[in-house]
Image (cartoon, rainbow, N blue to C red):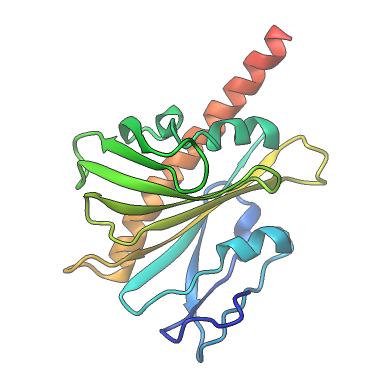
Length: 216
């Protein structure tokens, strides 16, 4: 928890007891005062939940989507960690090119979006790549889109008893509410995209794991 939390409006991001459900969505809840805290559910380890605590300004919203998969953490991470290849599971991405950096924190990518969405391209910066804790975070720093100041955090942890037989993926985000839209409008739109991405991630990882078993 930051020693000096922001003085702007602070929201409590609470991952509730529905967190273990496939495609579950959690929202942020108002917290009076300026203390940043998180109250994780038993389904989400403390070490994971702390990454999904966001300070949210009055003109922003945040949410989280949770997805379970039968693929192992190692297999899912092998897909998620490829900051240079989001199109491996993000179906709305047409192409991606690294425009700066070598894959470490600070790397910049330019993502081109398929037609039909209110966006053309997005310039994104890698903020966290924790190979040990399986955490990836990126922020949108430019492009042609309506999701200003977007920041996403994705974490992986073993499902069930932690035996490695499955994975829980949690992806949370904070983003500005575009002019003319409400927080709920923005949340529903972004949640839908994130949910589709995570469902595709689960399918991709499960296929990868099956292929690896067949070839071993």
